[in-house]
Image (cartoon, rainbow, N blue to C red; front, side):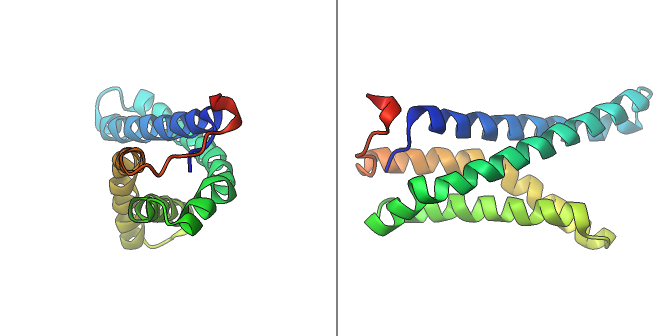
Length: 148
């Protein structure tokens, strides 16, 4: 159950930007303890703000994907396994992001951070597999209004 080209590319762009800002934050965070530490501290703060803003936009996109793609595809029995992995990964990212913001325990925050990083790096691969499986199995049989 393919979504419109415009919406699909908006989701891809959001995931790519989240990936880039998350990866950039990881690099900058490692460089905070160098001689240029003040610069990298500012970079990490800015990347984290952008990442958080993008995450809010992604929440809106995920909310729209429910009725536009997920619900229809699930009822039709299309690409359920990889779709469930993508949905669970997004749920894990939302929950761990909440935890990173609100958990006070250092140990819990460390574990939450590690999980968020691992799932965040894996999500693009999971999405890629979901798309490939859907195309190979003919799950994509409806075109959106922008695909004419």
